[in-house]
Image (tube, rainbow, N blue to C red; front, side, top):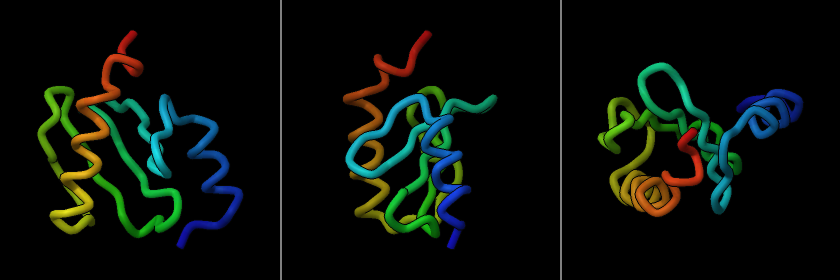
Length: 76
């Protein structure tokens, strides 16, 4: 588990936080971290496709739904 200061740093750098998930833009899409369980993360392409994850299928679907509903707030 990440230390509190690492989590605070991630939250501060996040482009958007939705229901405990920190979304941060990266060069291949978006990195998403579950703030409440930092062992759970996903990388999503700019098109919304999961590229890499440590989440189970249910949590991944929830995060992808959050992404689709909120992507407009992360665009430049």
